[in-house]
Image (cartoon, rainbow, N blue to C red; front, side):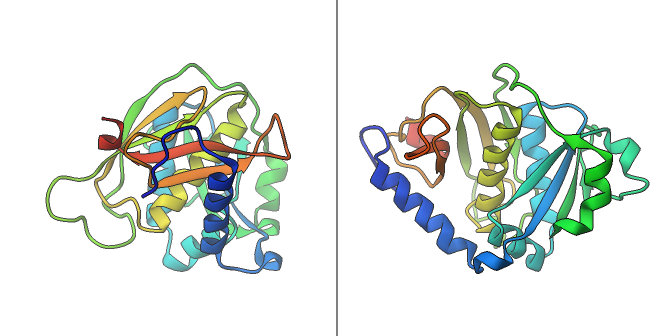
Amino acid sequence: MFTQDEMFTQDELQAALAARTRRAGLAGEQRRAAAIAVLRSFDPAGFAASALEFAAVLPAATRGLWLANFTQTLFLAGNPGNVSVRHPPTTTAADGSVCWYATAPRPHYRGLCLLLRSLRGELPGDLPDTVTVPAAAPGAAPTAGAPAQWRLTVDVRGLGLPQYLVHLTHTLGEALITGLLRPHDRILVSHARELAPPAGGYAYLRVHRDTDAPEALRAYACLSEERSHG
């Protein structure tokens, strides 16, 4: 857990990015696989729940491959009900709004990618809600006592829908795969226009190049225990 009294510094962002790179584990030439999400409609909490469910059911080797590819995901626009017959998905959300396909080399999904177009669109208004980590999540069983309470804050400043989904999926997928999130933990998903470190520190920080200043890094999502916010 890290603490910081002011805004994230470039040194801290660089350290968080380096830590994620170390966790990825595989050499660059092996980073050629991706998962796929097909979306019919979108709301932040519903999508977050579907991303957790997808990561939870993947076999250990597939989870490792996804992490090694920096949880790379292609987002396509389409109706899961229409494509699932020809292209059976790994998981489908209960409301049928999104389905997921397990990480594989890109040529494996060539037919699906030719059938559907890349997702586009603007991020809708803030819809904060709470999602629960599935019981099937990898790692140790839940610790004794109440499940952990988390807050996931995404900096939505300047993000379209595809960019937002990238950062949300990265944060949830990597936190679950690495064991930070445990079965039955609860996560409040919220949006902000700029991220500052919570007073009590954070557990995971999603860092990438700043879209407004590519020479700099930016914190796009922060996962912290709810009590860190006072």
